[in-house]
Structures are given as structure tokens and as C-alpha cells.
Image 1 (spheres, one colour):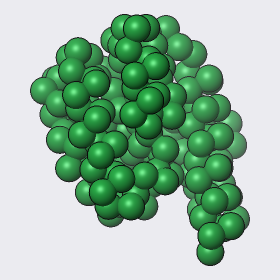
Image 2 (tube, rainbow, N blue to C red; image 1 turned 90 degrees about the horizontal axis):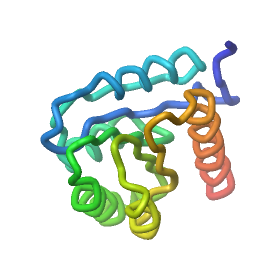
Image 3 (cartoon, rainbow, N blue to C red; image 1 turned 120 degrees about the vertical axis):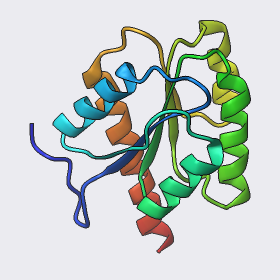
Length: 146
């Protein structure tokens, strides 16, 4: 697969495990798949706080933040993450989430600003396509503002 380059650079995605969840096999599968689809991927590892994720995303100048969560605390932690991004004026970074998320929580996650929710069994190609689309939109907005 060809790398996803723009005129400036490859699309960059931060993949992180938010909260106390220590199971990272799914996050590693996603990180590897995104690399295979040509993205520059930063994997921050397990037990990340919203503040750590935001700091890494800003430091790395990522195009998309991808969160993996299995602990059931996704609403609480995602509210903190989205509030933190807004408070720093970084809410232009699209955030996606995947993991064991009940369908009933999808609309609430989108209401607080999550751009896409991936449920178990989602195809890796669809995830990569959505991340690519969001990264492209972010870059286009930056060019328009710049």
C-alpha cells in the first residue's frame, strides 16, 4: 500500500489507551494496520491520562487522535479529553475511539465531540479510510486558515 503523503508530510496519527485499561492488543493491531496503510503512527501505550494524550498530540503535531478503551469509562474520560483539547484551542484535531463501547453510548460520544466510534469487528480498511478522511479535512482547514 502506498504511503498517505500530502504535499507537506505523511498523515500522523496518535494511538493511545485512555484510563486504567491495561489491555493493548487491539490498540497495537490498529497502530500496525495504520502504519501498513501508510500513516505515521505514534503509539503512547497504556494507562494514559487525557493530559498526557493532549500533550503528546500537540508535541507531535498529529492530524488525528485515536483512542482505544475497554474499561467502560469511555464517556467520563472522553469528556475530559475533549474539554482539554477545547481549553487549549486544539479541538481542530479530530478524535476517534474504538473498543468495547455499547451502541447506546455512540450518540453521547459524538455529542461531546468524538468524530467517529468504531465498534468491535470494524474492518481495518474502514478505520484507515475514516482516519485518512479526517486527517485530510484537518489539513485542508489548516491551509484555508493559513
